[in-house]
Image (cartoon, rainbow, N blue to C red; front, top):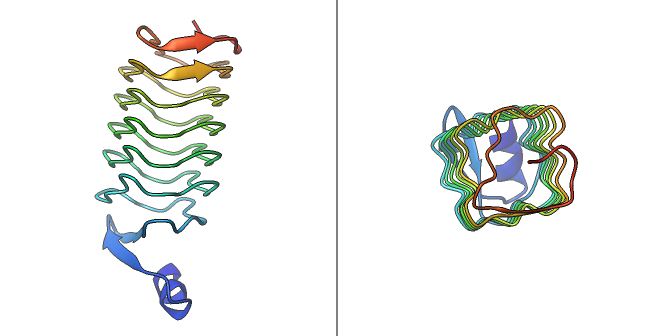
Length: 150
């Protein structure tokens, strides 16, 4: 249905993981979508809704993901190297083995997220919320302020 709607609106989507991948600079509602296999490196998905989406192993490096809702999403093994992820909501997300190297995570919400093995080397974590997060290791990251982040 989303594919037909996108075509009728003149938007370009390409297939992946049982659904359609957002084209570059097409922010929108991808809640609960299967986006595995998508290459979203460098994309502008600012303010998109990716809650509950399956993004396992997806390349999101250098993407503009500021203010994106990733609540309950699976980002296990995803590459977010150098991405702008300021003010994102990762509550209850699976971030196991995700790569956040050199990412801007200013004001991110990691409440109740699973973060085992996630790499935050060189990341800016100013003012995050980590209440209830498990497996977090912020060694090598800049952490200033925030709730329950150590």
